[in-house]
Amino acid sequence: MDILTLCYFASVCQNKSIAKAADSFFISRQALSKSIINLEKELGVQLLIRSHSGIELTPAGRRLQE
Image (cartoon, rainbow, N blue to C red; front, side, top):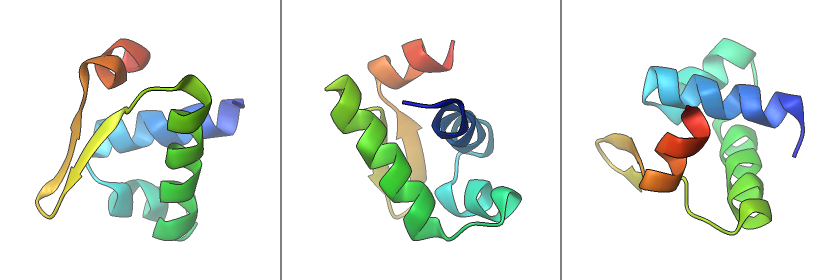
């Protein structure tokens, strides 16, 4: 875990979108998504529920956001 990954996560939470968060950091959506997936693996919890309509925070995701 590093500060940049936490900034990515915070941006995803704020924007409710991986695409918008990736655009704000000028990185690909795949790179940002992979970073969040790696964070989830490191923490051992799912942080986001991904769907076609966007993302939703899990209870663990809400705790990390706070």
